Image (cartoon, rainbow, N blue to C red; front, side, top):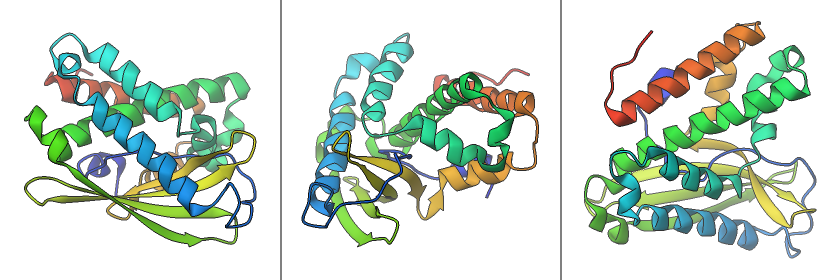
Length: 227
């Protein structure tokens, strides 16, 4: 599935990336209960943001995106996401350029997330936000210390949106960070990595990502894409 097709699936998200490291014992600070609590905290902050309907008025796109980005920044490690997405193309970027890619990819994810939540979870009715049900399903602790959690959003119309988050415990920050993110079993990181793998040019990679960000901005405002 291409990135373009994936953008038509659904997301709700508490998105992807992580600080590598080994997880402590299951009964320690890096246990599944803490991971679930921190993912739940992020989800609740996002839904609370959607109750601020003044942010969704015309002309308030930038403040809305800034607030959503701040929420996701607490859970996502964008530099690690960038390295995972670039994969074999990582040597094309020095540290400063990697930071630029990381920031732009974060912009893409925030826009993508916002559009999918609006289209598939909250809809056009502000009151629906308070009627959304959210369920958290713990997965198994993996050998590399990562943990998979499913978050299921159920709308008042009983439509379900299934998202999955692979997290790793960051001992320094005493927090779980998302390393990979999927919607209906489709990984956003993996799809971007597949799409970028054959590009082999830093300039073309950045051009492609900038184009995708621009397209999402125009999609949300209803504007026509420009070349």
